[in-house]
Image 1 (cartoon, rainbow, N blue to C red):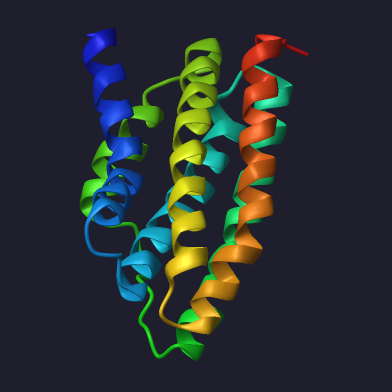
Image 2 (cartoon, rainbow, N blue to C red; image 1 turned 135 degrees about the vertical axis):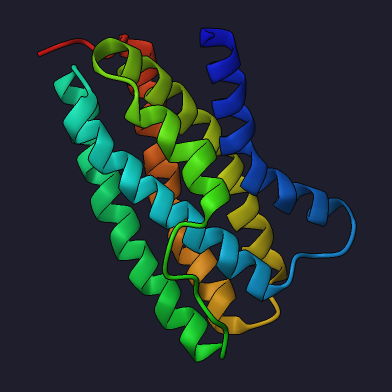
Length: 174
């Protein structure tokens, strides 16, 4: 059962950026496709950050979750402003597929099981998100979207670096 769960989580967290990478191999992603993916990422990360605060056993993981909830909520506002400037729409709710694949499985985890899975998925997810944002920062059709993607990269990199540090530290309990 744990293997099935691990596979589902990995596939789910990799799906959105994976679509972006497939697009990168062929035709570039449209700005609207990027906005849709970025919005889903922000909403999922903010939601999972809140779950981390509630379900993690490690104070470091709880603090990391708080940072993600705050940063991705702020990023969603920046994305919304950039999309509005580019006359693009922004999804305002997590779609069923992302909710079912990415959030629901974490709602069943508590304590160290949550900590380990969450940190592992944050490393994988942020690695793929950075690749997607770098591609958009280079290839966006609209300057507002390009500027947004460029501005978001340092925060995503900070998230990845901190997730890797948590992974290395073994998420010490406090």
